[in-house]
Amino acid sequence: MTQNDIAGLILSYAYVASLIIIATLIQKWRGYQTEFTRKIIHIGAGMWIVGAVAFFDHWYIGIIPISTFIVMNYISNRKRIINAMDLAGDTAGTVYFPLAVSVLLLIFWPHDQVYIAVAGTMAMTWGDAFAAIIGKTYGKKSYTVRGHHRTFEGSTAMFSFSFLSIALTLVLMKSELGLGKIILSSVLLAIIAVVLEAFSLKGTDNLTVPFGTSFSLWAIISWDVNFSMIFFGLIMSALIGAVAYRKKSLSESGVAGAMLVGTLIFGFGGWVWGLTLIAFFVYGSLLSKYKEAEKNLVAAEKFDKGSRRDFGQALANGGFGAVLAVLFFLYPSQEWLFAAFIGTMATVNADTWATEIGVLSKHPPRFILNGKPVPPGTSGGITPIGTMATILGGLVIGVTVCVLQSLFSLISAGYVDLLSQLWMLPAGAAGGLAGSLFDSLLGATVQAMYINPETGKETEKKVARNGVRNRFSRGLPFMDNDMVNFVSSIFGAAVTVLVSVPVIG
Image (cartoon, rainbow, N blue to C red; front, side):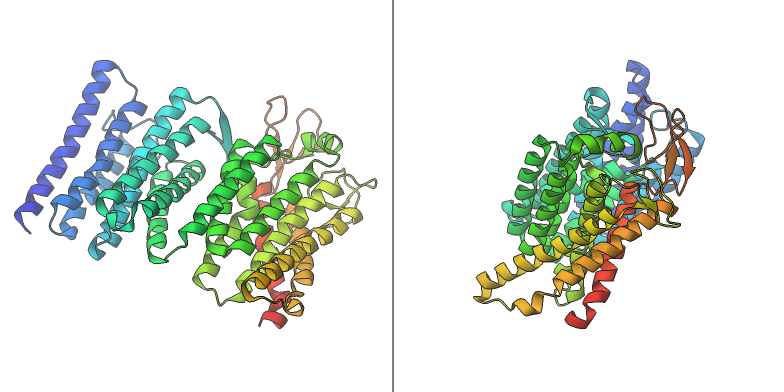
């Protein structure tokens, strides 16, 4: 242990003690609420990592202070010892944050990659703090994620401060990346931070944001990502999202979701993958406008969401495709990943077509479990016309991928072996049909359903149009329509892979 290490330990504990004293004095002097003063401590504590990595000579000494605060914060959280930091009924966020920082330092500091840990910590330190402050102070436009409200003003602050803090960290600690790569990396990481913060409840964003941004940065640096494709995917998805928003096909949060999914699929999958995703959004958005007024009569009463796709729907429909794109980037020789992508896109497209067309059937749908007639829009109900739409929706994705693959083969190689790609058509149809039927099966068994207290009818909506909370009826509470779509897309992908094995090996 060196003198710097000893001095670092003393200064670390003195620094944090000073933060607590200052926040406490401010609370008593100005009468600020704990929600505000804890952000002072949060930002100050997060900035500790900057001084620590510069001051300590040995990493295993440097992680001691932040590690001890895991225990100290846990005790304080349970006993509410520090009034300027602890709230009644508070989550364990004050414990999760030092835990996340400790783990990141333990992973990256010994390998001379401490800038990764610092970048992830800065996103949570500045992004989350100002998201809360600005969201509560100026937030007017709200959106709901998993039943909890977020504001666009808060999410914008999360993005802005995450971007600035990550970019500044990389400029100061990893300038050899180059300004262009730093800016593009920071934009992508800030988007990831916004998504993680929006979906993480009960203080778990203190874990997911630092871990998610840090490991994403590690992947960007380690995997030699094609930044031009990522940038193009970001621009394309942003433009298409803006057009879709103006056409009322996407909500504000839906634009953000489309940008995230589009950037990942374009950036890691390439042209065919990205254009297939765009084709899906175009097909679904156009079809949602067909006899929209007639379908809205059913949707308003039965469906949890309308024709404007939101953030959750964007991830449910394209999230697994984004995962497959990343995996295909890492393992390009694994053709089954490409087949799985066709299957997951065929499933979400087929399900969209089945819903949009099936709800217009002149004959009542029949419950998939027993064949008995059920009201239009009932989860688990299927119709002949809806089933035909399912097959057609899956087939259209197969055709789309086949055409795009042939086009790019012609551009790159100068010829097209069409016969070797025809497997995509039956694979898309089979995957779409299987995934969509599995979606109906989940809707009939495990999807969360509610009873409208006024009408007595079953619905996917947690809250009725008049603001009254509907009564939970059946299924699993967490298995909403978005989760059903996501799980079904995985099932459809698996079926497509099985169908394609004889061809792709």
